[in-house]
Image (cartoon, rainbow, N blue to C red; front, side):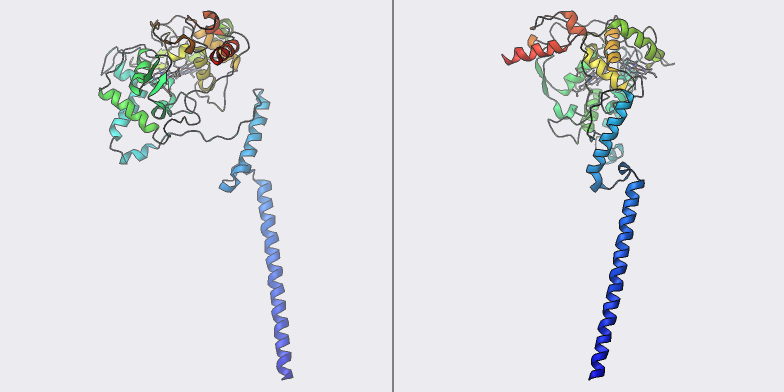
Length: 370
Ligand code: HEC
Ligand code: HEC
């Protein structure tokens, strides 16, 4: 009996010992794991960790990095949250798409517009000035803030103040043919127009109706508190743009004269004065975040002063004229930088062309409130 109880006791003690040993081991293990985690955190900066549950810390770290960077480069120190910019759909997915060929044809027209419609165009000779849509809608209309097409399918048809009507995609595309490419519109039923529309619809297929994804179109440059200055712009142009677009602004054609290696910025083969880029804000926004070739919205080379001054210089040089008297049928809907009167606000054509723009915008706000 006694013996048996002793034995039980010993067993209990042994169990207890084993248990504490396991507990000790567990604690040791925990300490080790904890140490390891701390060590990883200390040696690897958070943004390099790709675990999704670190997302929020990651954003904070990156935000502070953005601030540090912009401080050291002397530009605006505004802190920017990390944004999910729009990305085009993957072309490999097209294998399951019945419209694959049409969509890729549309893309090719955007990239090599001049091959089809330029001075030696194979579909329609001399229909355009020889520029490509891609010259202004970079990377086939897919670059973030490179004037991309991400919001076209989702926002058209829509009311546009320039025509004072509801415009569909065909009308908007032909606008660029007639203005940016200083040419003639395409037949809405042509295979080429259908292809361009199919391509844009495919690009925007994941964008909800009515929405504009982050990074669509152009990123606006802040206003200057003075008028943009063509003289200063000329100096900056010579230093930063002329190497490609040439001192005379005419660009350089490719060897077989089917399109431009460096597109023209003014002169007979450039966009006309009814085009989007003829408005200083569009030009400044485009070049600020896309030029010289290779920059993007996260690494710019121009100051905002240079962007506006170059816009003023380039858009004061000669270019084809378009009769735009029917544009902006409602005078009060004219944009602040439309350089042709009449206006509802009493500011001059000169100020509407070169600025300062802030007073115009404020006046227009007070006019619409009344
Ligand atoms: C010289 C530059 C230039 C060229 C070349 C050009 N565009 Fe544009 N395009 C613009 C600008 C700038 C805008 C934005 C204008 C605005 O918002 O007022 C624009 C806007 C558009 C839009 C509307 C985008 C939106 O989100 O609302 C479409 C569609 C378009 N272009 C299609 C084309 C097509 C197709 C071609 C070729 C046939 C072309 N563009 C060639 C400068 C150009
Ligand atoms: C390294 C060469 C290079 C430099 C430097 C350069 N660009 Fe460009 N630029 C290009 C090319 C190439 C395109 C057409 C892009 C495409 O088709 O993909 C272009 C397109 C443009 C366009 C739209 C098309 C047009 O002709 O209207 C504008 C506007 C423009 N550049 C302005 C500028 C300005 C302003 C500067 C100086 C701040 C500048 N570029 C510097 C190569 C350059």
